[in-house]
Amino acid sequence: MTLPSSGLGLTLAILLTTAVWAQVKQSQEPAGDKSPLQARLIAHEDTYTLAADQQGEAFAKMLQEKMQGPPPPEVDLVFEIKNPTDKDITITLGADSGSLDLILKGPGAVTIPGQRIFTREFRTGRPVTIAAGKTHEIPIKQLKFGFRGVGMHAYWTEPGQYTLAARLTNRGGRGGMPPAMTLETEPITLTVKAAK
Image (tube, rainbow, N blue to C red; front, side, top):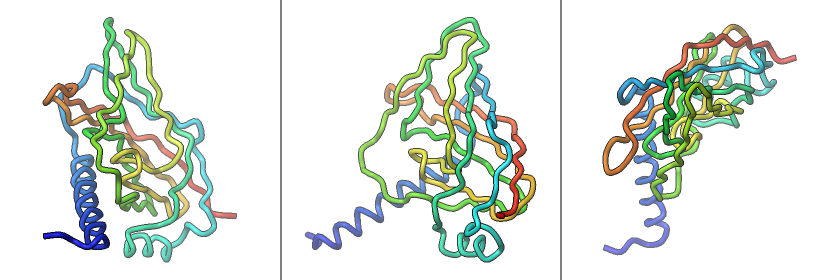
């Protein structure tokens, strides 16, 4: 059966969205063997101010009902990976088989899907070698994460104390992919102030 161009576009959009949701669901569950690598979340800035148009119960309700929203808050954080062993270790970053996820908790924490439609190619990522005793840093500039770094968005909608943890996963291990891996940080505390 031949679909009209509009129908074909809709079908592709639905298929891509389904694939993304599968990735998002997987990204919320730890995967793979425990790695000798260590991870921590570093806050170069640990105090933030709510945007005037992104605070309050009404804004939180809008996010939860529409499951979409404005760009998430900007932050100044780093996901640091340390190799404490005496041998170099190579990992894969940026592959569609893995993701860097954020877990935000607090008085007004809301997490919703971010970008829903993606190009169809499978991204294998890039190898990163961490020398013995050295570290590798991944900057985090916004509370967006998950599939391709944009599949999910997190928001703080009320002032107060929040905790944020991060988890890097790779669900590889087959077809020449790197071994499956999970690296999870301890949560850090961030302070969010009311908009001025």
